[in-house]
Length: 315
Image (cartoon, rainbow, N blue to C red):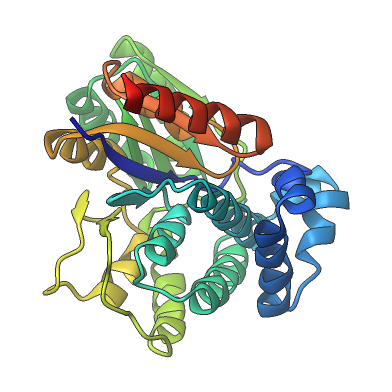
């Protein structure tokens, strides 16, 4: 039985210095992607990734284009090995990797959009105004109860529904702080996250409208893969206003777990995280331990993934 494969593109927080470097140094096609990306972005992105500081790379305006570019290079390395996916999904900024892979956006438009998205988000809401935290060990129902109770103290919303027992909340400092006390009562815990703003909350409403002006300028092409929308937790359909969904994505919850469950229902049994880190791989394993999960971020993980897939195919 042939395996159904889904590619997963990571989001912010997965960046690290030298990500993608050995692909850049050893695979000509990957080098070309980094070189072309730098040209489109009109910023010294290779220097930031290969020689920069952790602090500099962590800045939203730098990390988003850097992660996307590295992820596209990783996907190219897989393509050269003859590995393709019918389904694709990204977490937050990773959705742009999925849209490029799925044919909806050209590489140029995708890189241009992520640069502007990062710049707009970077300056939209200050860290003093809000933050994010991970809610652990609580069911989705209990998380909703926590959000409802904490909202008496300020704006608080569910930002990322990642996997069972892990939901990220976003909002104003006082509400997030009070949520930790409520979580204890509910037999869970809240862990503050080191982020530069309350991402995926309605505090980014103004930023989403600003970004929509950028979206208006690009063409959305016909998809050649099934691409999932973070806002819907389901695939994009022909009737969808894709630009509007991408505008909303900045200020809306990311329904990652819902998307993964939908993919598994469709018969996907092999997930490959394409890009830096293994965060999404961890989420998938917590959702369903029976599926195959791989990641590709360097030559070593590329070889391991290719060998595993080939050996499973021959069995």
